[in-house]
Length: 87
Image 1 (cartoon, rainbow, N blue to C red):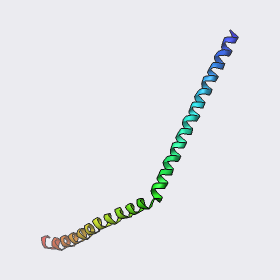
Image 2 (cartoon, rainbow, N blue to C red):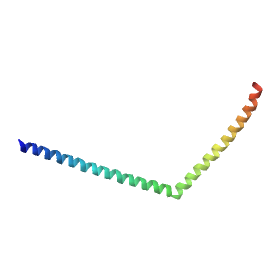
Image 3 (tube, one colour):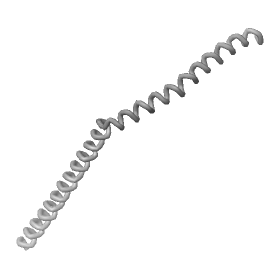
Image 4 (cartoon, rainbow, N blue to C red):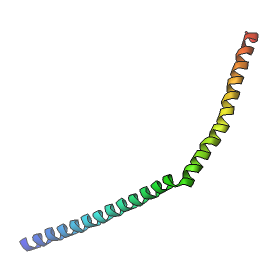
């Protein structure tokens, strides 16, 4: 009976060890995947075409939003002037 308990404990220990080894491999895979992803992000950001595209997008947004803010300011000024007539 004592031998069976010892064999059970040993089998559980072996199963735990295999689970830990599998977890280590999973963690190692995730780390390598994260390193590759970080490397591609770094390459994307240091690539001159990526930077030029980003600058082009920012300039386009400024060209779109700047006239909108000017129009909004002009509209606010007009409504402030007109509000005096309706009070």
